Length: 229
Image (spheres, rainbow, N blue to C red):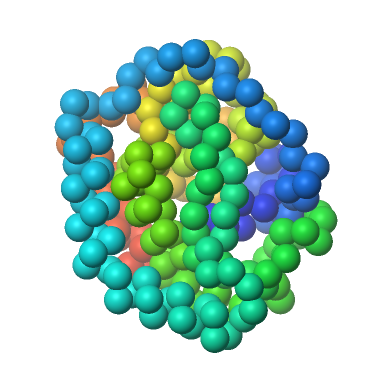
């Protein structure tokens, strides 16, 4: 859903108003973890549930993975996956995976504002972004233990520059998710501080029931193609 946000400048508040210029990954500073030990990782069966569901989904959706991969390769030169360093549990960096929806090299063109009609988005890219199918490779991140199905979205460090060290410590105490409370509560309409507040609320209330509620809301938004471009 948020490859547009994968390529933003250091001013997240400006991004919320304008749609966001792409950042140059070559100038992105290295982030250091602000958490020495995770405070909590969620309820006791969260990781087993993630492992089971992601494994089953990867098997069941393998034909979809193959079809999308072929369409990307046949319609646009470049890699199938879009990769980027994000901050995960305990703010340790990991590589997030998405199906590539823009022309190869689009992230090296410097700061440019994105829009729904961005000509760097490929034809198949528009479809997979609209339907959120570009997020499917994150099932691999979940299976590897880098992400969870539900949790705060994994951000680049500068996107958390407005958060206090304590807020970042709490937020980083759970694995980042493919979807989360902020994503079903407004997404791009939210200020960055509101996103952080929703993330902290999720950490405080994290439970199996809460995850199921967020998952149901996420499915509804995906079916309705809400918050995508």
